[in-house]
Image 1 (cartoon, rainbow, N blue to C red):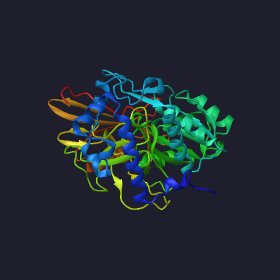
Image 2: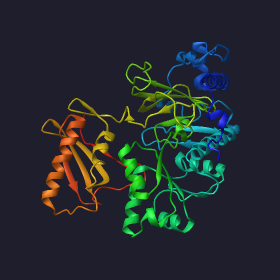
Image 3: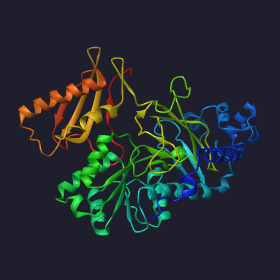
Image 4: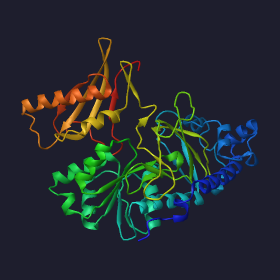
Length: 435
């Protein structure tokens, strides 16, 4: 059976792939000269398509940040007339202007192809039934996967977010084989399966799950695989780069192939903005090279990852990024120590006695920063088994101290105690006034 959606592109030799990137970068520069935002920058820096000779020339471009999109809201980064734009997506914009991303029909076709390539890579075919538990509308996760699955020819179930009992009814009735869910919602869905007395490993046809949209640990992925009896593949996307499909795991599950015929990837030190070596964690910076309506150059994603050195056994030549460690702007600084929520999750998921819902609260008590880690117990632990809870609390505290280099307060709570969300999970409450 053919393993590649587009074998010629997916297995291109590196020199040919880089040559394609330069060609597409030139075309993208030509388009972006029409953009009110980039047009001025290019004039100032004497950037023209003819001036691009190699990928090294990208260093002449300034970085683009989210505030550039907000300050030129709504259409200041458009490279084509609005009559050629057929859709826009937008962030929630809870603080000031939202970010708006524009798409031509060609952009949407390319995006669907990109997602189809990802899904095909892990074995989804036109014989599968694909159920999408992501929100539709301005959020890109719903429509991105929807059009990708349709491009594959799979039977699609656009269930949208929430209503877990209805999700489970659809999974059972329609014979769903593949599901897209954010990790925290996947764990919530597993709980509702249990409440309904249904074992998804035995009572459903599920075999593939796509998880992404929020940082998660390898330990959480393994938990999801065990709960559902599926292979769970890590997906990376962001609305500024289209949405889902920017990078995706292959069956090796050892890093995400970032599609370099769509984007040029750089990893930089988030403070100095200098490039870092392969294998070294830094901030991912992306340049679109296959988009018409609103190309972005050297966009600072704020996501922290690294390029995984070496070739992938799957045969694809597009480089791999490690799972997202966190965001440069999500890092917590407590008592001078830099901490990412995913470090805490990694420890918690190693304890089989615990559930999957947790909350980190940081507050200032008597001029000292204190961290409280609340975590729900699993089904097998009784809340009145005080000796077990005491030993468990000590063991968790000890391992957390080893990992994050300070001692948090650990509180074990009954399952269902902490807030649940159908959207991205809220993992941190920072109550400090001047953090």
